[in-house]
Amino acid sequence: MRAVSNLVNVLAPAHEHEFEATPGLPEALPDNERLLWQGAPDARLLLRQALHLDLVAGYFGLLLLWRAGAAWADGLSLGQTLGALAGMLPLMVLAVGLLAGMAWLIARTTVYTITNRRVVMRVGIVLSITFNLPFAQLLAASWRPRGRGGDIVLSLGGSDRIAYLHLWPHARPWHLKRTQPMLRALTDAPEVAALLAQALKAAEDARQTLPERAVVLDPTRPMAEPAHPHLPQPA
Figure 1 (cartoon, one colour):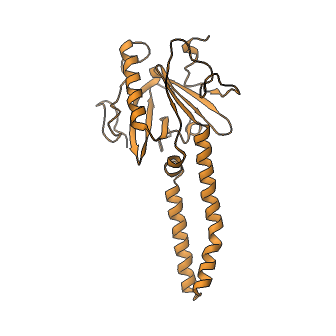
Figure 2: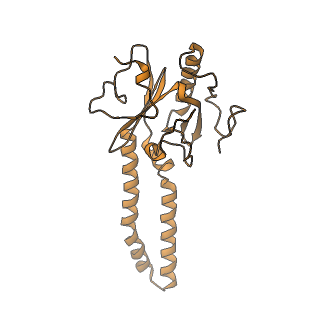
Figure 3: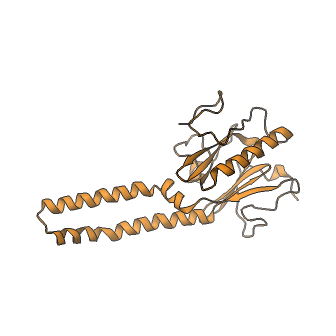
């Protein structure tokens, strides 16, 4: 069995094997590593938060209002106006259906895993990629509530980087230069954040993987509040 140091590599994500010894993991966990939690994004939350269904629906609503106003200005009857609006509906339904299908596929093919040593993200619809994020590479971890769910944001320390396009939509929006992986659209985000905080604290106390400068954030604190004086406050 491989040593843990060979399993946790941020910069060299492994392509998913056809057979997974443990769902969401490229190979079985070592004897000294325990599975604490596994989960996936909620498709409905993902549809609204990552794929911006609300904005798309609002845009389509404005198009319908504009078309109705143009029809009224042209002197069309009520029946003709309704017919013109009905002609726009199939394309709108198709667009919303495509977004919903994408959200469902993302949720179905994503597996987030937390062990007592690392966070693992198996992502990708067509080409699955597994990112192993050891606790030693985590500078900070925090969570932000969003509607009936929430996101857990991981900040990587050192010079390690993961391309934004490799992570999307499992990355904090608009942080392109220094990407921040996210466990996104979780319905049980507070509980998962508390579990991750306990795992990070236990690893720090055991002096196994975390560097001295690592920070464990309070999982109950929203991201808008600075959790450490030396860390920049998230926008």
